Each structure stands twice: as structure tokens, then as C-alpha cells.
Length: 205
Length: 204
Image 1 (cartoon, one colour):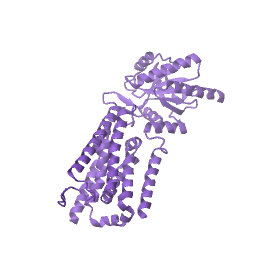
Image 2: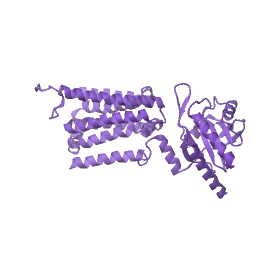
Image 3: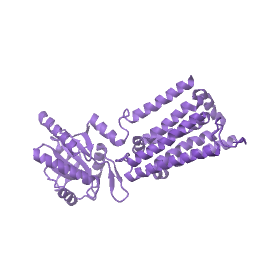
Image 4: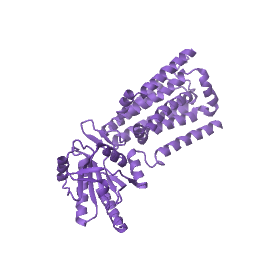
């Protein structure tokens, strides 16, 4: 009897611990947890100072008023960032064609290497129009860490001198809060989300 | 004997501390295979070892808990659950990203090892068979999952490390299969579950 009770207790404890650690069996990886958390409760972002491909300095809060589609990249990247760049190109095209009130922002997490000319080269490669799509780097290293942390972006060494990172398309709402995270190849879904956010923003103001 | 036991316990505690020291810890955690298939088992082994060397008076606790651990099944559920918990990709990441999780890992896994060591001898042969079958299938399923996963499962580890872990799990499963076959072939698994072959010189 005591054994049955103890077994039931042990089983309950294991299930409870697993449930707590996985948001009720909804997120078994850090990446899915980040997405779930952002969807459930959009979060504010640190108001970091950035510098774009034209050398212009601006704060993240300057972009408020319309939704911003955000990606984190480093310009030397030859894998995910290329796919992300193509996705952003696609989004920019749709934004231009439909006259959407949506901005695009690429943030480099390798500001030491990614100087303004390198950011400009990246922007040229994907046809980024500076008024619409800013390719930027944080001015202060501490600001970079705070921004990566707030967005749940984890950058590790790829063992070959480059980086591995949880590439994704982030959507920041018109009020400057991170509201959704899409797969790196989900340009269409991100665009739909941005469109909805732009409509809501227009209604609100 | 008593003193020797305490010395053994001190030695194991020293191993545990060594595992927690930054150079060893970082070295083992820098790689996904080493983290999951070396560090986690070693932490479990700390508990197993402690259970072996600790003097009998400490085992008094075990005697008191004994009636609650009939057939070793509650203890085994707990130990298995703890291992399962730390094999979830998110908790493995959390151990690297949050000190609280890392500390919990270093405390709970040895505890699970201790409980496992106290429960295993009580487990009937059929129970051990269930555990072995589970370990075998889990190793191969996990190996397959890690090998074919299209995306990275841990944000702290690279894709190639994940594939290595997949292969390593397949290897662990294969090793376990060979071990089980050998045991049966050599006649170790007797119906009464009394352990190793020929210890009592019983004819096969």
C-alpha cells in the first residue's frame, strides 16, 4: 500500500516537474518556449542606439508607429542569413507593391566586424532601400547583449570562425513590443502578421 | 570498514566537486555528446557510488524508507523521471543559461543515482527487463530523432554536435544490446534474478 502511494507520488512529482519545465508539455525546446512566451505576452525591448547602412544613428523607439519586421544577422554568414535576406527581400517587395506601413530592420550581432560599409554592402546585396529597410548595428556592446537577451537570440561559435544562431523573423508591433516570432523561411506568414499589425495600428491611431 | 567507507564517501564527494569546477564543467558542457552522455551519467554515478560506500548508519534512512520502496519501483520511477527531465532539450539549455538549473542538475542527478542504487537490487528480474527494454528503445529512438531533426534542438549546441549525439545514442543502444545478448548467452540472466553467472557454481 505504502509502495503504491510512493509510486503514485513519484510519478506525480515527475509529471509535475516536466510540466512546469515545458509550459505544460507545450514547449520542449528553448526556441519553442521563446516563441510561445512572446505570443502569450508580447514583451518590450530595450531602447538601444543603432547605426544603419548610411551611418545614420537612431533609436529602436524611433521606429514606433508602424510594425517592424526584424532579423538578426552577421554579414559574413553564408547559411541562414542568406535565406533570411531572401525572405526580407520578398517582404520588402510586397511592402512596396502594396504600399504597406511596415518597416524592415536587420540587426548585426557582429558589430566589430560589420562596419557601416559592410552593412551597406549587405544592404546592396539584397536591394534594401534605406528608408524602408535599415541594416544596422548596435553602437554599444552592452546594448547588443540587452537586445539579444530580450529577443531570446542565442549566438554561439560555429567552430569555423563564424556563428550559429537561432535564426528567425521577428515581428515588433507599432508600439515597439515584440509580438511574434516566425521561422526563418516563413516570409509569407510574417508578412501576413505585419499586414494585420499595420491595419490594427492604423485603426488605433 | 567504517572509516574506509567515510574515506570512500569523501573521495566521491571530491569527484563531485571536481565535476562542478569550471574547467571540468565547461569542458564537458562545451560539447553536446559530452554533456548528455558523459556529464549526466557521471553525476548519476556519484550517487551510485555514494550509496555503495556510505556507512550503514546512514543507510538507516534507507531502511526506514524501505517499506515505501517495495520492489524498488517508486525509487525507479523517480530516478528514471529525473534522468528524463534532464534529457529534455530545453532543460539541457537551461542548465547552461541559468545557474539555478545548473545547481539543480548537480544536486538532483546524484540523488537520483543514490535512489537508483537503493532500488535496483530490490527490482524483480522482470522489472529489470522492462528497464533494459526501455533504455534500449529510448537510446535508438533518441539517436534517430537527433540524426533526422531538421533544425537545431538546443540553442547552445551546433547542428553537427546534434548529429554526433544521434550517432552516440545509436552506439549506446548497440552496446546495451550486445551486453544483454552476452549476458543471456553466458547464462547470467537466471529466472530467480540472483545475478551473475556461476557465482554459486550452479550448472547451466
